[in-house]
Image 1 (cartoon, rainbow, N blue to C red):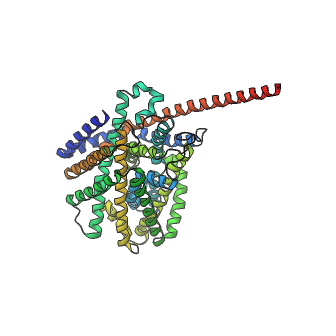
Image 2 (spheres, one colour):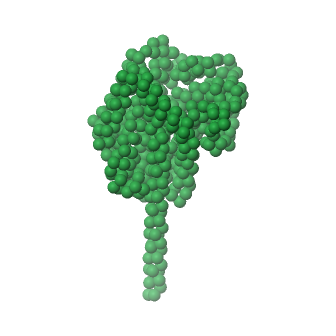
Image 3 (cartoon, rainbow, N blue to C red):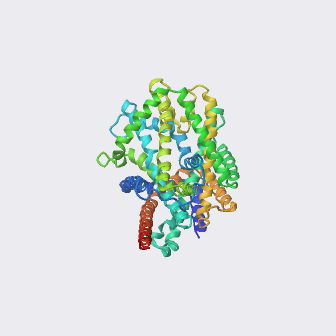
Length: 511
C-alpha cells in the first residue's frame, strides 16, 4: 500500500511539474510562504527542542542503553560509520555552500547590519556555523535514534510508523495512521532526492562549463544525471558493505585532503583565527539565534535562510535518519548522540572556516571580487575561490570529482532507504526494489529539469516539513516513554536480584 500510494502521488507531481511547472511553483511557494509566516515560531521551538532532547538522552540514565542487544557490537568501524552518516547527511551541501553561504551573508546580512562591513563578515560566519551545526544534526539524531532503538533493541520493523507503537498502540500504527506516516516519509525522501539530483546536475554542469567550457545546457545536465544514475545503481546493487561504505570512505578522504590543501595554501592563520572566534561567538549566541524572529521589523532574512534551512532539514530527516539508524546498530545512546551531532558539526565548523574564511579573505583583503561572482552564479563559488590558489584548476577538478561522488553516495543511500520504507522495513531490500526507486527518482529529476519544475518540487518537499515536524515531536515522546518503561523494568529486575541475593545470604548464615 505504501509503495503504490507513494508512486501514484509522485507520478501526479511529476506530471504537474512537466506540464504546468509555473503553476506547481506558484502553488508550492504559496504553501511554503504560508507555513513560514504562520509557523516560523513552531519551526524554531521544535528544532531547539530536538537539540535539548537529544543531549538530555545522551547524558541521562538512558545514555548507556545500547541500540541492540546488550552484547551487540557495532556493525561498522567508527570511521566508516562517521563517513557514511556524514556523506548521507550533508556532505554535498558543505561543498556547495562552503564558500557561497558566508559570502552571501556578507553581502546581505541579517536585519540591522550593513552589508560588506566587518560586522557582516562576523555574522556571515556565525550564521553559517548555526545553519550547519548542532541543530540540523539534532533533527537527524532524533529520528535515527528512535528508529535504531525500536528496530534493533525492541525488534520492531524498520519503519517510521513503528516508533509510535508505545504512544499509539499497534492497532493504530498498523492501520491507516501508520501508513500515512510512512507515505509522508517516502514522498519527502523521493522529492528531496530527485530535487538534489537535478540541482546537483546543475552544479556539476556549471563546474564543467567554468573549467572546460562545456556549455551548461539541459542536454549536458541530462547526460550528467544519466551517468550518475548508472554509477549509483551499480553501487546500490553491491549493498552497504561494499558500495556505500567504500564511496563514503573515499568521500571523507577526498574532502579532508581538499580542506587541508586549501588551509595550507590559503590564509592559514586567518582561517585558524576565524574558527576560534566564530566558535566562541556561535556558542555564546546559540540560544539567541535559535529563537530569533523579527516581528517588529517584518524582516525576511530569517525566513529566507534559517527557517528555510530548518524546514529543509526536517524534510530530509526521513531519508537521513533512516539511513543513520540502519548503520548504527550496537552503539549506545550516548555514543550515538555524541558521534552523530558533535563530530559532524565540528567538521562542518572547520570546513566553513577553511572555505568560507578563504573566500572572505580573498574578497575583503585581496580584492578578488568573489562576492559579485557568487551573487551572479552560486554554483561557481567554490571553483572561483579555488582558482585563486596554487594549482587551482587541478584542485577544482578534484572538487568536481568530490561533488560527483557525494551525489552518487546520496542517491545510493536514498534508494536503500526508499527500499526499506516500501519493503515493510526490511534491513536489506531487494535489488529490484532499489533499482525501481533509483530509476524513478532520476526520471523525475530529468522530467522536472526539462520542464523547469525543479524549484517547485523543492519547495513542495519543504512544505512536507510542517506535518513531519509534528511526527518528529511524537517520536520523541514515544521514545521517551519506551525508555522510561525499560528503565523501570531494569530497576525492578535489579531489585529482585538484590532481594534474591539477600535471601541466599541469609539462608547461608542459617546453615
